[in-house]
Image (cartoon, rainbow, N blue to C red; front, side, top):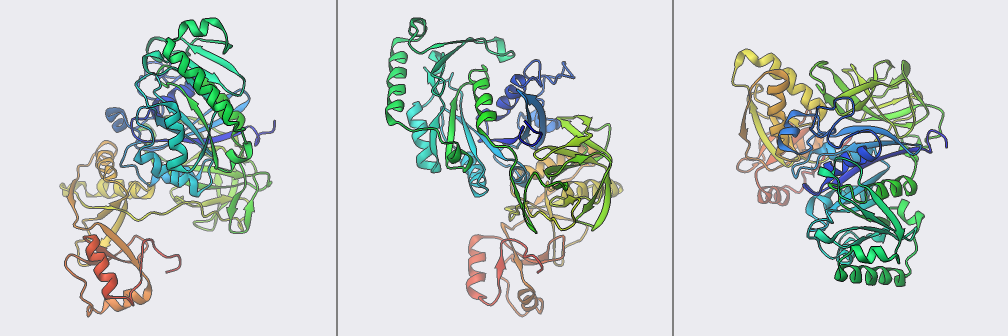
Length: 529
């Protein structure tokens, strides 16, 4: 197997509390990257989740930023991108999904498909990302498996193919039946789910399987497997890779039930890195020239280093440390000398990387999200999605003597894409207007300003709910002041100087649009505007 064919790069998506972070830990446990679930191999006393590196994440038990975890499993090189799971997730989540080749969708079997899952699924669907489904928490009271399968088809429009089927549920959950190999996997619980669950594999007709299950659970299990077999649906690898069919796995991440079966099924049935669209057409991963794009920037991941890491998804060719590449943002040639593999806060020097891999580049202040790095200057990727912010607030520095670190910290967080900054016409320039997709990002901004730069800040909610971009003609019409904007409707500009207009309510936005039909409003800045 060549280096590209053995790469598997994916993200885990879910609604908050569906078990995404637990599943991430257990995949690392079964992949050999952790000796004990919840403990990074190199730091056995650290009981916080390996992928949640930020102190705020550990305090709140949620993933706020996105991190990259890499490990080898059965000859495959796995790149697992951990994404924020909180309901107020940021654009960071969307950006991560541009860097993956597949996604594992975690669903709480007791609740089914929830709002956040649906939102992230739509992003995957638009990008034709293959989705593998893990029905989690089968060891708790759950909905009927057939009902969960039916919901996938009705709500998401996906054709589900159950690769395995639960043997009981709740306190009667004993294991899963692999429909492809026709084998039953009976699990034993381990203390706290810290170790791999002992498993006994046997034929479905073995007497001791019936003896270990409750009579009603066993009867329902046999009937449901029979119904699935009678349906006659065949597994289609083509439909899975096209994002039309989702392989479905059942289990319990906290007890390690079904984890290895899902991991084995994923690496076998998911695809290696494929071609990417660029300015000169489709770029094959087999192309000799190195190319990649920056999908994430993170500062101060390790307080001991106080540096900035740009995360690059390798798309073609071979990355080698100290190589010279063309940087699309500046048009200059840069040397990539400080390259790292990140495991939470831990970092390790990377000498080479292949398509599908994620490389952390340290110390390049000129790098920005969306930039292309390549040996062929004609290749420019346009992978990063943009979204209109939905929340606005003013951020104050209450201590004038701390202005310099306040400004430095805020500039870093804006560069990372944690928040966006706008200017409001006739407002004090020293008080920035921040905007974000979700309000949690403002809390993250305040926390990191204090934790990483030693400065306090105060938030003052802004009265706007919407921002719209103007073209040159619309901006010129409004600049004269003859057009009545309406109450609390204000003009301003984005960081690139593009003209914008802020609206306080949906009604104000509709009224302005209906009244001034010659003025075009755009949800996003128009390229070349």
